[in-house]
Image (cartoon, rainbow, N blue to C red; front, side):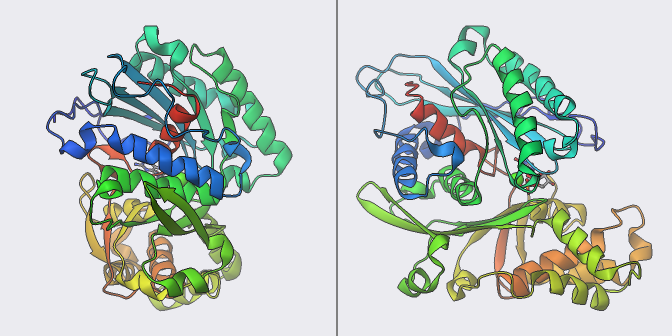
Length: 426
Ligand SMILES: Nc1nc2c(ncn2[C@@H]2O[C@H](COP(=O)(O)OP(=O)(O)O)[C@@H](O)[C@H]2O)c(=O)[nH]1
Ligand SMILES: [Ca+2]
């Protein structure tokens, strides 16, 4: 696998942070080389759609596992592309995926992802919807360079907004989405019905779980040993895992459990999106609680952030024994404080976050070049994991931004759904 040039990651907050990750997956483990998993994922998504309360953007449902033309025999050799915009509360990202079908008797394979992000997110333009939509235009240029013009007309482009827009007054959110839709429609790409929407949190958690378990090969390993996901956004935080114990299934709130069938096996996922418990939302809640008299030192900071999470999250004992991948702000803050390698991530225990929070909060003079919120953020992450979700201090977390150089998060899972629901065969 080779990486083409990846621009210097020293992008400023407002400059597009270009991280074009082109790579071939020739040397990737076989599981990534076939679309067998895509079939699996689409059957998964098919039943997810049938089971999950239809959220705004899921009317496109899947009538069948695969479009009739997606059979091995008559597959033709060509490339398929999908463009997914992730309109997050702190930034907008574009994921351009390409699938290549090499041999007519083989299923297409996931070939590469091109990823780019811009800040701030759409919700920062709540009163300037035209300007907000303009940030999409710039990212569309990346897609035009990445997708051959011969494929533009059959390459779907979709934008899904998350908690940032969920927290906006509906009228402002809809005004932003309407401007974005106009820009997508001016583009040369295929703009499906429902191409621009606010995704509900249940879907956000499930699709991230599908993405990570697809990329790590768990979705179709014989062991069925899947991994859980922890996603800490700016406005919301998601947790999703596959419970092993009946007790979890029976004792969890009904809207935390979503079931779907996957090749004769019924999976019941535990998933929830906590709106308002994202990192930036928590900062506002903490500062609001502090009023003007900001305090210093880990003990007082921890006491304040604890008030934000106390009693707000559902706990499940078996989480303590499950394997979790953690990304977004969990990853960013661990990388910012050298707890993990910026590019390759790493495995941390919950107590590593607490130790770093104590170090930063009790020695702020040593961290003047970092974000002024570093102490609060690390304290919040510790409180969220330990007192919120109830993880053990020794629970290991796999901090991961990319798996096989594909970004973790909900976008790949969402793209599978779009390709299948549009019956875009090979
Ligand atoms: N590398 C990478 N970082 C991401 C991605 N999605 C979110 N993040 C990071 O996660 C943090 C906040 O997530 P965001 O999606 O804006 O908030 P949300 O709308 O509440 O989910 C920011 O630091 C982002 O840089 C992604 O696909 N790739
Ligand atoms: Ca997000």
